[in-house]
Length: 261
Image (cartoon, rainbow, N blue to C red; front, side):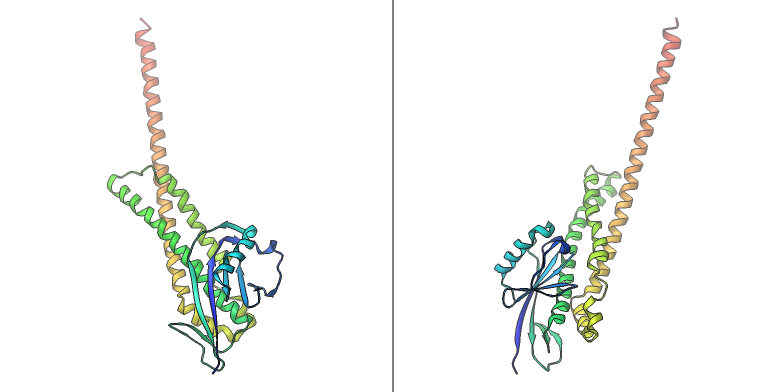
């Protein structure tokens, strides 16, 4: 039985790819945008900043990303890559094995579906790394609040960092639509079974739920910090007012009893 091997790699290249501004050539399909690259390679572009390469060498990947640079918002230097080996064997039962994905056919719809799984997994990987860094910063702050009962000075800069991470929630729901079925399934219902396998193998649903819970905790932490900061600020203002009143009283007494004689 003859078979073909396809190698896929997903890379996060930035925060967003401005696809509408690009003049696309060699387009195989849209939603997601699928382009022919050189003779045998294919690139699938996602608006949320991920590119999936099929049979494109690492050197050519870099060249393609360089050409894409004017349309990338906030480029990233992450070396994180989601890779997959795909073997196409006509008539075989499609399944996921330890050494990769086994398919009975390979066309543009299959490419787009596999690209969706890899792109979402790559996106979640980067989100998980960013949120982990945020929790590393939150933990010592929480310990200091518990031990000393006051907010350390770095809390204010941490609020800015947490605000950036909270943007993840908007991107997951708005741009990446991690929890939704890919558009290609609506046009190719027969691929839904394959999608469910890919979704399960990459734990997309469970990872999204875990991220949502962490984001909720970050939201809660932010609210607590803001309330504590506001309470400190209010208390400080009250002390200033009290001191001013005391000073005014002393000045009044001075005018009445000292200068009056």
